[in-house]
Figure 1 (tube, one colour):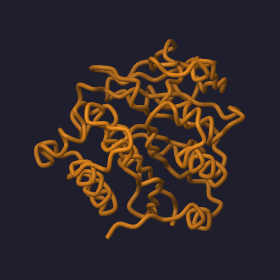
Figure 2 (cartoon, helix red, strand yellow; figure 1 turned 135 degrees about the vertical axis):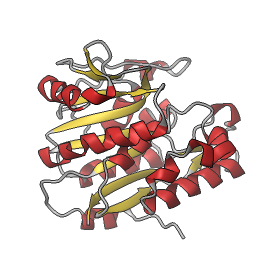
Figure 3 (cartoon, one colour; figure 1 turned 90 degrees about the vertical axis):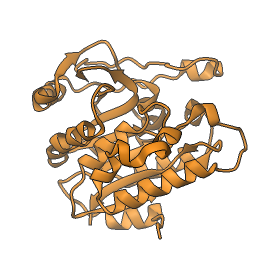
Length: 274
């Protein structure tokens, strides 16, 4: 039976260490950046719990590429408002964190076998800044994004995580941002969790806890359940990268394991030293 560990228990479990935890956050609606919600409060509490990183590498559902893995090497990443028809205050929000160009270029080399390349035009989309503004509200930690290659198979994204994992020993917080279930056409405000959403969310959590990465990357094995949970895979892929960056001896903490709007899983998780 899957259980959720409280932030208090996570705080107790995070002993001072050179090895950084890794984080996946279910970011949901951009409105979570503007409103006081249970999700935004959990993100703020998590930021108070995590060790302070030297830099943050973000794999966001909202930077999609095909045939390449781009790495943002800009010195001052711009804040991207990549959404439409939301309240004006959302478009006024800025997250003026510095970039990490030297580290980002190292990541380009690290991912050379995955068709990596430098990019200085992207910045921080709302998959990044909408949650980072709660984790690190002063915007004083260098941050950069790595894109998701939509043309690659699922196992590719787990392998990306494996190649990034050593950065944990250099004070880098690796963060994925997406949603474990993300079916926008099936969203209904105030709706009860739909069966397919509960089923896939539970399947994912169970296989992640078992460290069964093969099952999480088995598109054929997941079949229709995956298709229902993710009509497009962009919000799923960052979770695979974070799974790939974990190690067998990491402890796993789940948080905000709620199905929102009937078809969006807000489940987040943290891998950290036991």
